[in-house]
Length: 145
Image (cartoon, rainbow, N blue to C red; front, side, top):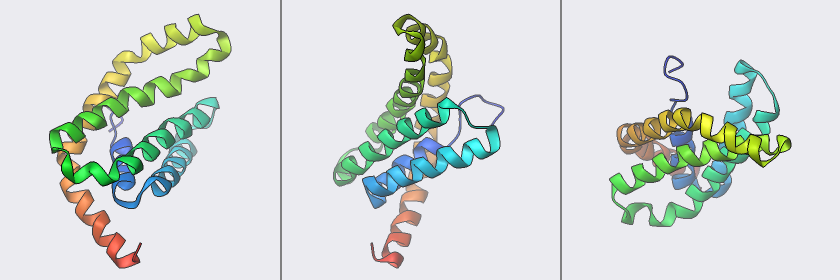
């Protein structure tokens, strides 16, 4: 998916893991995803911010797990879309080191990429959630979690 910047299924997989296995698993997968990604792409201060951003998303998804079946799929896809913007916002917080104006400029300049991420999340959620939720729930039964 590297040909389309910021479009990858990682965030949706973290969301779905949080939905099925809970907040702790969502947070753990967030940590492993950030480290695994940065083993390939390189580490930096942003690695910590990625862990924070995906960690918040994993935790939120774990807390939303009990409501998942009561909320229509399109609304859940909109949640995934919002998580794309949340991710970009949290990752941009590292620019607070340079002051609030630096953060605002960096965050605004990143909004087109956050939009790609958000729209990708929406589409990935619609396409992948029915399959991945069934797979994750089957695995959860096997593991008796």
